[in-house]
Length: 73
Image (cartoon, helix red, strand yellow):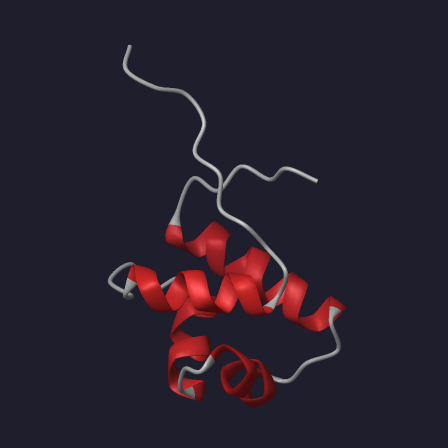
């Protein structure tokens, strides 16, 4: 399923939904993704200044991928 993510808050909500669907607590997801629990908390809260590499690690741990759509106008 494709979901449009227009903001850090929308990304956080999508991660939270996927985490809960996977039956994981925040600390469990952090362990699987190799990040700290605080990072997961901040990601799910929509913090706009998170490190992209860590975000991608969390997405991968949830079996999610990031796709860019479109191109130069």
